[in-house]
Image 1 (cartoon, protein in one colour):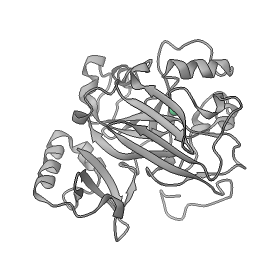
Image 2 (cartoon, rainbow, N blue to C red):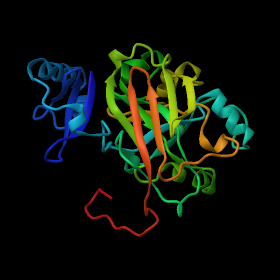
Image 3 (tube, protein in one colour):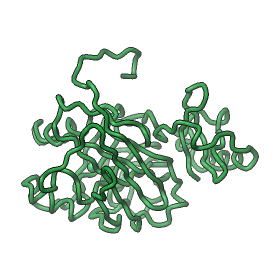
Image 4 (tube, rainbow, N blue to C red):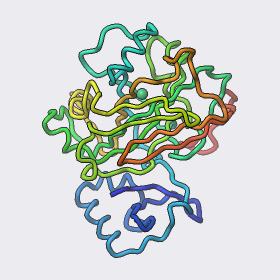
Length: 303
Ligand code: MG
């Protein structure tokens, strides 16, 4: 099943299922895609029943797709240097030393999340080094702590795409901790839909590609991951409970902008496309924005 969060006429985010004939609205049975994820197998079965008895109410082309989980309950988790060739290109730039024996983890705040076709706001006063990172994202289903690798796939609800857009100068400026460079508002498109795990028989046999302005920049099989999904889940959950709906970005392959000669960073007007066969495509335009200007929150919890 492909779960979507979409906005139709009234602009309210709604959960739905994308079928070959259009989008079936899951409201009022469900308030959000997250509710389906948290509800587990029983909720998935109820969603399937809704799809079987209700006609699609919307064309994909007539709605705005949001990230499947537009407001995660807590930070996103991410893995750094998870493709050998990306590690090597980072090492050649003096950014990495020894290949780690354990996954490198970092977090991203929820305010990075944006839709699969939304504009990516870029402010060159904040950073001159905006860079793309096409990635496979895992969404956790049943939560758990210290999940053994052999049970890890039972805790995967599904998959989507992510673009872990990073500001390289900020990433390196703050004590070697990556948070700041991975945290700009609206810098992480997710989606376009959340594909349930039963439709992805092997997450380690997918081709991941990323284009900038039509030029192929990244192309790799997820087979090349250094740490595969079970190991990532096992190590991340070691002593730390993973919750239903948690999002884990699994790392980007080689071909990022800063490792090119000369470096090729994102500029306003660029278009970035991330695609994984069998899952979908993110397509985002880069636009100039004033992120460095003081902007108090208008309402609690939203920028
Ligand atoms: Mg990344």
